[in-house]
Length: 111
Length: 111
Image: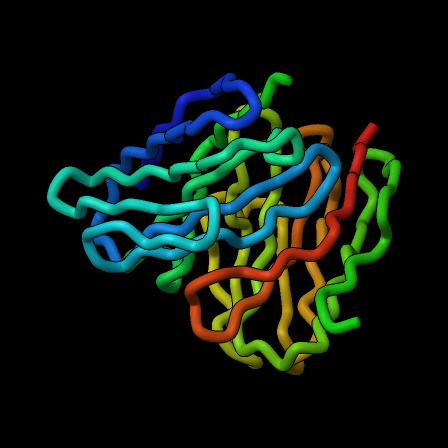
């Protein structure tokens, strides 16, 4: 089977930088995505990495190392509205080449 | 507003009853998915359809069935509901496979 690991909770203060890690063990790999989900809401797409390296989108960046089966989401200049759950998801040659999600990391941003 | 519409928003269902969760998208995306979300387990793929007329099994397909008669609709049916199917169900779609658009979810309680 496929398995993904993320920290269950992360806490940081407003204005800080936080990194949410994701490690995966899968039978093949095509890409890694990140999603944000506020309480009671639907997941929303943040980023997708298919190749090694850093992808930047505004305050959010996502990194991938395929050799280490590892990625992270970096959130800069944290705002209160960033308090949410963050999920990594991996796509590979399984389940019709569709995504398997990690258990999620709950980020709490303190004033 | 373009997106995914799920119905009902919430439902309480007696065990043993049959239930169909509806999902409609207006983005003309080829692929559609059903995930269930349970606390601490993230989102788990139930069934997927990479294109109209085809479906496939995901991580947790038992007790569920789907059909994809056209591009826009992807209903999920519980033939005989059991309490372990109590969950939040999300329908999603994608076009190029990088990121999913999710519906607002259906909260189902089986009693």
